[in-house]
Length: 420
Image (cartoon, rainbow, N blue to C red; front, side):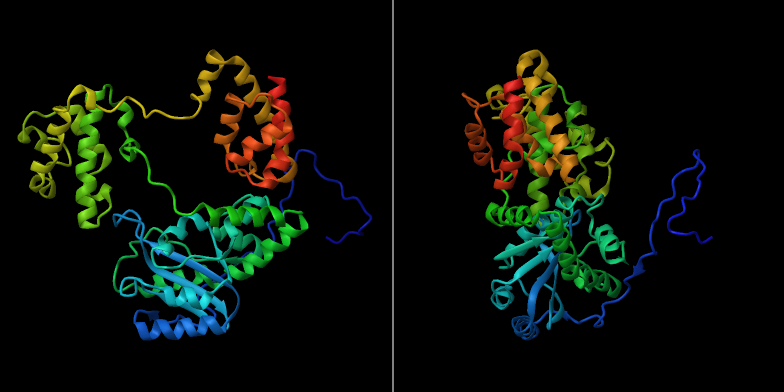
């Protein structure tokens, strides 16, 4: 039915409002230039590096790891695309030094999606960006409802990417052709996506915000080593005493050492659930350990000395060497205890969260991107004295807040402290 633009069409007040989903996305099934051969020799690497140096504009970069299969987070394929150079699929197993590519890229801007995931493994290969545009972070700042690569490409470019190989074992050799197509498509339209997001950020007045965020990623460097990583063992909340924690730590460390030596993901050597069940069962002999599920398997029967020895080490630890129930922290207590321990701090945090939620809605930016939730908690638990705007801003900067965040939230946080 066609209506005059000035005519109001009556609607059923009880009907659901119509949703304009737009035209269906066009499937992106193959690289526009065809699937390039994998770069796996020094000669081919130098040739592609020369092509990159002769290319122009930003450089799309991605990496595939073998999370859940291999011990570490090393890259097993690096995908690069630049105008004038095309797409390169580089195998870092025979080519662990990619400084030739680094030199070819120079100070050109890198475009990555969720850069924090890939930058550490790329740095292992000698690839470190001088400038960065993170499309996932840009999508967050732009207020997009979904920020996964496929969702952002579909919403802004009208294209749908292939799915299905992100969790594959990329250490597999040779890599199947359909996996390579998937990998090539991950950088196929990344620069176009960058341009679309940059335009949105400019329209919203957030270009400077994004620049500061990207610079903060580059300045952060590699992540610090995790403290007490064994405390991340799934199911350990069921352990009740420090002796059990000591046994769990010893068994976790034995598994980690073995996994590192064999370059196998620790969970494939021994699942977390098996570690916890062994500690809870507290077997006094190797035979009793072998009666437990998982340990009955042939692989773990061969390792019974390793596992039982670890349990024994934890069981025989002196009392003063047992781990505490929880790792001592330098931050405030859990928020659910604030009401009892410091009602004024609880009131400050409630006011701060309410104010930040309003700003989040006003600017269409997730609250966690407005300011680190941990930094907000620390500030509300122990505010500076006197808590004037300058002192609050100093605390925020010392906690890693960017200038745009300080300007946007500093005043309201000062008011929340005063209200408490």
